[in-house]
Every structure is written in structure tokens, then in C-alpha cells.
Length: 171
Image (cartoon, rainbow, N blue to C red; front, side, top):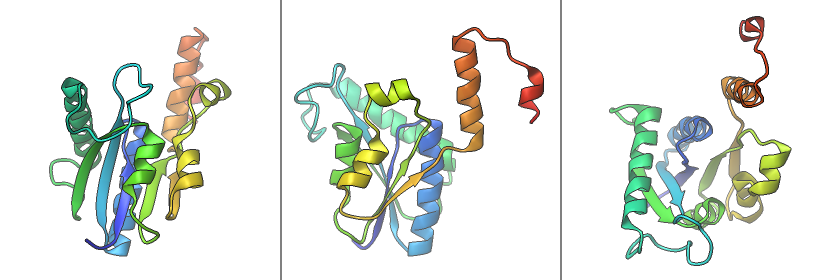
């Protein structure tokens, strides 16, 4: 099958940035791009990891397939990335699914580093940190774009009902 660049996909802006970077890396390496989306049944917990085949939650898997297709279309449009592309939807926690998706030291795993505050970091473990600690291959953690950081700042202001100074948007 040859060399692969495996990209974690969630559908958020950070994963789209990571998908673009993964496509660039696949082109440079002459590798195939694998887009992997992890999904969990409502409530997660025990039994949420493993193959999506024979899942008791077919509607959840179908929704995950739809999210992957939407993310790939949003990232590359109908023409695709211009390189060999494979999509995979796997039931499980994102970090574990991505580490399981890479086969050997010749692969490259690309994940979005995301914007994380203290509260979110305490509530949910970082997928990028898990991959960096456990993957058998190099891991590229792609930082969010500056626009994504500004978007998060605006959302925080809105959540706290703080006034927004329009001059800050022009900077």
C-alpha cells in the first residue's frame, strides 16, 4: 500500500486546517492521504471503542460518515485534494482511533492542535497530546489559524455578554 499520511478529522475549523496540511505533506512524500474520523455513541463510555461494523448505533455511524464527507468537501471541494484519498470512520475515542490508524514508523499522523483553555483542557483530554505520546510514527500537530483564535475570542465575549469594540476586528 505504500506510505500514508493519516489526518484526524472532526469537521471543525482546526481539522480542516490539519487536512490541508496533511494533503500538502502527502504530496511532498508521494503518499496516500487517509482522513480518519472517530465517533462515539451517545454517552461514550464502555463499549464505545472498536469497529463500526455491526454497531448497535447505525444512525450514529451514518451521521459520522456524513460529517466526514462534509469535512472533505469543505476542505477540498468536489474536485478533491488532487492526490489519492481514503476516508475512514471508526467508532472510538479520537486519540486511540488515530493511533490505531497508523501502521508503522513510515506513516505520518497529522492532527489539529486546537484552541484549548484551562476549563476545556480539564474536561476533555487533548487528542494531539495523546497522539504525540502513543503514536508509533511522527506526529504533526497543526496549530489553529489566527482567524480561528479570533473567532474563539469573539465567541467567548458573546458568551459572557461583553461589549465588542469593532476596532479590534480591524487589527
